[in-house]
Length: 125
Image (tube, rainbow, N blue to C red; front, top):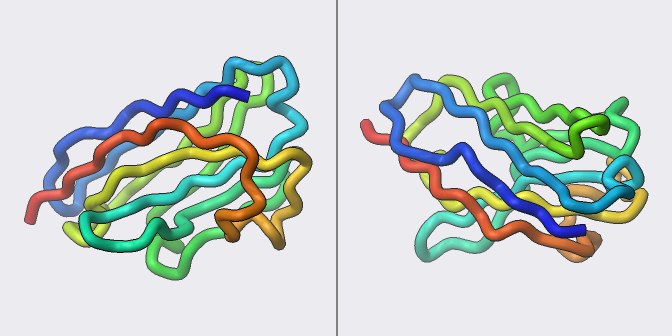
């Protein structure tokens, strides 16, 4: 599948953004989806994931209670709602797809088959 992420931008601390990731494939509903982020000079890290059915989600501890991942299989899109943003959330956010990925594996970068190009989120203090 091909993935296109959007929705990034500049926001003040405490604000919100919603990222979207649209898939061009007709088999989107068969893919577990994840969001990862990479800050300057740091490794890419797991943010959130949702399994292919949408029934299970997982979050990094740093975003639990602030971020929500969801998907709309009819529209081939996965969302990341980000609330109470902090300067340390500043990064390039990328979405990724893993064929029938189970929720237990979706926090690992290596299980993903396809990656989107990333969208920049900048949180000012």
